[in-house]
Amino acid sequence: MIPNYLRLPSAKYEDLAACSVDARYAAITNAVETDVDNTQDMDKYSMDALEELVRTVDPDTASSALFGSTNWDEEEAGDGLSVNSPEKVSAIARALGDHSFETPNLNALVEFYRNAADRGDAIAIMFN
Image 1 (spheres, helix red, strand yellow):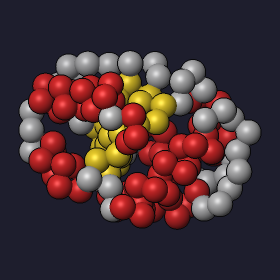
Image 2 (cartoon, rainbow, N blue to C red):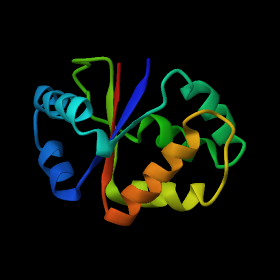
Image 3 (tube, helix red, strand yellow):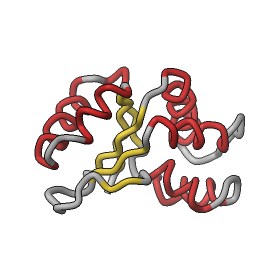
Image 4 (cartoon, rainbow, N blue to C red):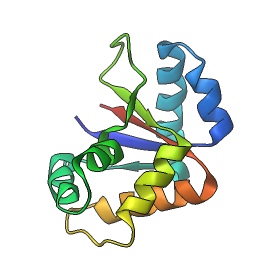
């Protein structure tokens, strides 16, 4: 499965946290497909990225960065939907620091986390 990342302003994060799973999927699917400025994906390299991240940061941080820390698909309505809160995004961005990585798209994802942290955004991760 390919993780797709979407920056969520904190107000949108709070709104979606209060929604049903179906409403979350609809909103995030629409945004991933239409809001290219606020999205990022790891294509087929997510497991390579996890291995590389674990060599740099602790396994929990690596897993949260790639796969999210909070399950937003409790009903298993789709292929998977998780989220990192604005506070978690900030902690992940600090842990990733200025490291440079070899795995394709991983440096772009690190920059994506930095930008989200600077804006106070959450990051939703949708798998497909």
